[in-house]
Length: 428
Ligand SMILES: *Cc1c(COP(=O)(O)O)cnc(C)c1O
Image (cartoon, helix red, strand yellow):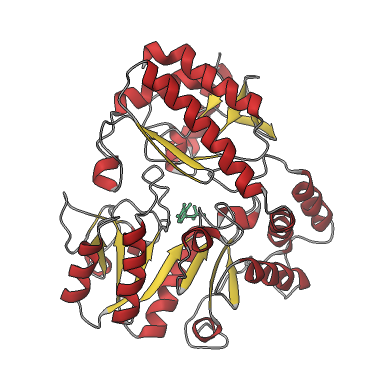
């Protein structure tokens, strides 16, 4: 495959956009080489500016669960656009999407729309702090909650201690209020709660982690976490930006059978347009302005274009709830096929999967948290990634990302993907 025009466009982009991209992972830093530039996409396929076609396993990092340029979403947005794209004044469709989301997700009465997952998580934490009157939060190493300051905190090597910022520009003052625990390690949470009695407002977690590869929670861990939070009067925030409306109509809460106190959404809820949301029972949500004292706002929040895309997407999912099972079966099929190839070639690997999320780790150890995810062989991953790209398979360009399957993928596409791995396996 030739990527001539993509490479030329990347050179131009780098002159006027830092690193040539508007979100870092897109730049292929972790795998080397230049990113491809996309011309268009439809269903399961991406078409780049050099005329190459790829089977896509990212789906814009999750939102496009029914495939690219899904007709009902495109039609809804096109129709709405003709009537004006934003008013900054209430519209009926905001209530329609809110009602539908509230009916699909367990345990929430009210929802507020924002413009990204970052905003959703940031606002959820502010609300938790305002509601509880406490300052500190607990997050888990390797969990991503967007790029707000409070979340850009990483664990020192295995230490469960006060976080230090892992990006310049995040102040120590901010970092000291973010405590770090280890995913799937309940004891690490218990230790923090005991050392910070009555100071922790919330624990925020990806209920199924997807930003260190896909890592499902151990049942005892996630149940124990719910119990610890309840006992200590700490609000449990499920960041369902990735899992919401993807793992099930009711997201990870439904799959795991556990209810959080506050939920954050993004990705699928916007159907491919910039939408985030956070939600909770009325008692908590009524703490938000203008009803309550916690401030949160947005000029373009709930704009009709974004709402119409979200409404078309959630309506489609709500009307065809078998889609989640269908996607899980496709993902299992892919899992079996890829695993058989890797086993035949005796390549050390672990594949993690839940619903339509899956990741391959080139590691002989189980991957259950950030430390074990970081032990994967990145050289193998790079060769795998570029080999598959050459075969026309577009995978996330980082070993720390989950793949997101979309329902436009056919079994022929999955077979083609497995065959592609067979073709390049000797290079890995
Ligand atoms: C993508 C993601 C975010 C951030 O959402 P943006 O829309 O990129 O700001 C937050 N949390 C999780 C779990 C995510 O996957």
